[in-house]
Structure formats: structure tokens, C-alpha cells
Image (cartoon, rainbow, N blue to C red; front, side, top):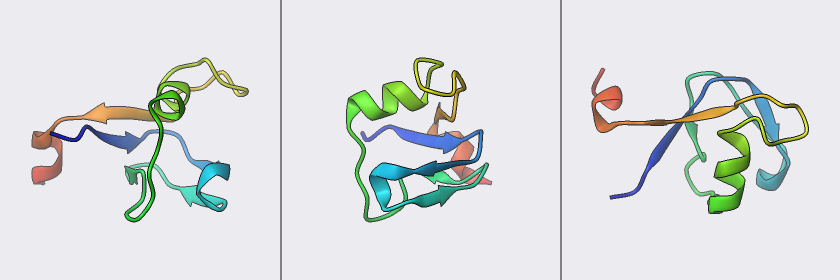
Length: 64
């Protein structure tokens, strides 16, 4: 099963042609891929901005 991620802080993804991810959107956007390293960077404070941008979601979160 593929893990899913939800955006919790708006950001511009330089790795996806500058796509702006808004809070509540799924990451990555359809048609794009993300490396494990990039997901780790965005889901922790180990990045330039020291902020968490995405969190892992469960399938139950998508049922609303």
C-alpha cells in the first residue's frame, strides 16, 4: 500500500515545477513523485524553514 500525505503548511515545491501546495491537499500532486528523502525532509523540521509541511494520513482520513 502506498503511503499518503496531507499538506499541513502551504509551500512551493521546487521539485514539482514550482507547484504551490495548499493546506489539506494530498502530497504529491497527481502525476508527480517524491523521494523518501524529500518526504522525510517535508515531514520533519529538518529543512531550511524548520517547519513541518506534510503529515502521513490513513485511509480513513480520505473517506470524508
